[in-house]
Image (cartoon, one colour):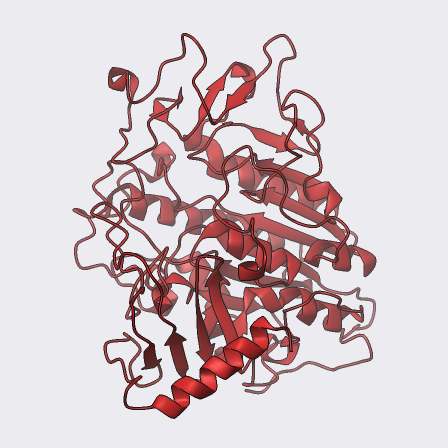
Length: 494
């Protein structure tokens, strides 16, 4: 692949009368490898996301660090493996911040490089400490790990509290109506989805039957704060508005924006503009909505004449899931659509569909469009952009794959451990090895995803067997031994 990119000591091509490029990471939630038409989807069309792939580099071997959300987000921002962090797991809505405020992160490193940094959208990395008062200052949070500005969902849209946090405070909170949050017991007189289904416009399929807000019951209990509660149907518009506002405020100087979409995570409640836009039900509709959001952001960059001076990365935090807690007929309406494409598994799975996700990078006018087979991880962004901006990288596990990201090389990582504290696998070259793991082979009748757990070693050559249908561990025992040695070496930090 030929790339029109001139290197210098800092790694930045400082064209005449130009400044270092802006960086935007657009991060979808539960979007599968097969949910994007650039990666082969025919039932779903994503023309705006495809624009990034078509005008940039489409990575065929791009990975999230984990098959669940919080661990992947932790890895992207910290540059560290989530399996090494005990609390890097799917977090309750009142969890304390799991990122170490004393260590380098992607935003803190870029701020040191002269960027104004902002995050908008889903967070789900914890806020405050064990004794946090939601009605006061909410910290530590994004501002303590390197972001200059933040406008985030407090946790995730199926968990209370159902509010946005702007900087250190809940946005729009009336002090005369304080908010209360509990993950232990309900507040007296408050209805729940379990006891008051007649109040619901969207019913849970499993779990998600506690406090009701906007006709939807959530995980956890909440009372008060009525003026600050978000409206699910408006969430995409809210995050787009705040992202465009951040860009507008900082258009005259280098900025880094982490634009963290909530789609297609549950509850899937699209704005009325997108209801019925697909034949796949609410899941398909919210993916169409997310694609529109991406298109609006790209158009805004064009309007401000920032596109050619902005690096845009698009990816997803883990693989796909159909029924993840609400009755939206996602399974029944899915038809022949394959959310993970040809990959096996999905969200929660040790199979490749859990972490192998859409991954693309566009820098219009600087890098030549193309397709890359380089092995790259979201966890590599801090180390790679530290090299790019001439900063010292102090993150522990990410690798500098900036040449692969910019299309200057087809060589990325050689090895990558995937997963979290309760289960890991390893990609090594064209091989994936899943060591023996105790536990069920399926996530259950609702989510119905293969976990990848088994009592035996599983070895797959994903170049020849992308769907991981043929376990060749017994055929290649020396390869199993070699990759296990590599895994143990990485785990030991060597």
